Amino acid sequence: MHSTNWSFEQVLSDALAEPMTALQRSSLDRRMAPSLAQTRHAPRWRLALAVVPIVAVASVAVWAGATILSPPSAFATWTAVPTPVDPAFAEQMERNCATNRPAEDLSSFDPQTRAEMEAQQEIFRKLPLVVVDRRGRAAIALFAERRPEGQAVVTCMTIAEEDGGSPVNGGGGSATGALESPPDGPLRLFSALRDQSDAGIYTAYVGHVDPDVVQVTVERNSGGSVIASVANGYFVAWWPGDSYATTLVAYGEGGQILAEIGNNGWDFRMAE
Image (cartoon, rainbow, N blue to C red; front, side, top):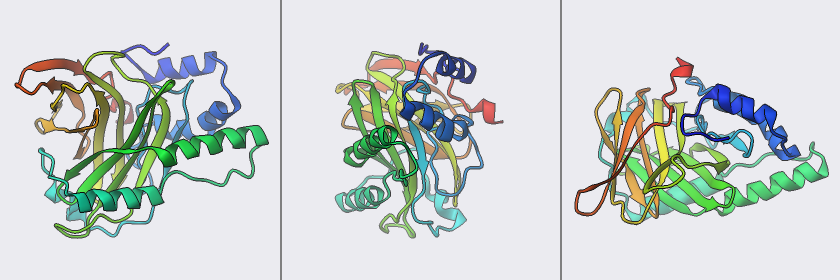
C-alpha cells in the first residue's frame, strides 16, 4: 500500500479502500483533511504533520499551545547549521512541550473510541525527547519512538523572546503509525511539515538514521543546503520559508556518504 512515490491521490484511495477502526475513521474525518492539505495558512502556532503517508493506519492531530509573542524578526537569527543546545534550553523545551502535549475533550465519543483515543494520547504524553533542532531563537523539539505500527511522533516548535533566552510555550503536531521511506537503510524519512507561525512560514523534515550516521545534509530547491540536527537515531531540519527538500544525504564519521535519498514526493506543491 505505501509506495516510495507517495501521492495524496494514492493515499486517499487506499484509505477509502481499506477498512478502518472507529478510531482511525474518526481521526480521518476530523483530522486528516486539514493535515493532508499541506496548508500554508494554518492557525498560528499549529504544526501540521502535513505529509505523513499514514491515512489508513494512523491518527494525526494538530494542537496549539500558548500564543507566543515573538516579533517578526525571530527567524532572522536562523542559521543553516544548528545552534548548540545547552542542557538548560533542552530541559525548558521538554517542560514546555510536555505541558502542551495533544489533548482534547473525548466525552462525546462512544466508549470504545474514547478508550482508543485516550490510549493514543497516553502514548504521546510518554514519548521521549530525542532531538532539539535549534537555529537562533527558534527550535523544534522532536519526541518520537519506533513502534510496531510505525513511528509515534510529536513535534513542538518554540521561540525564545530574546537571543540567549529560554524558549516559551509553542504548539505542535502528532501522529502514530508514520511509515519510514525508504523502509530500510541508514537514512529514512517519515514526516515533512509546513506551517505558519507568528514569525512566518517554516518547513521541516524529520526522519530516522542508523547509529553510524553522524550528519545529514538537506539540499533544497532554493536557498542552499541545511545541516540537520542528529541525535538518538533521529534527525530534524527546519528553515523559514516555503522551499522544499530535494535530496537528503547521510554521512559517516569519516565523511563518507552512507545514503542519499529523495524527498519521497514531499515537496508541498499541492498547496501552491
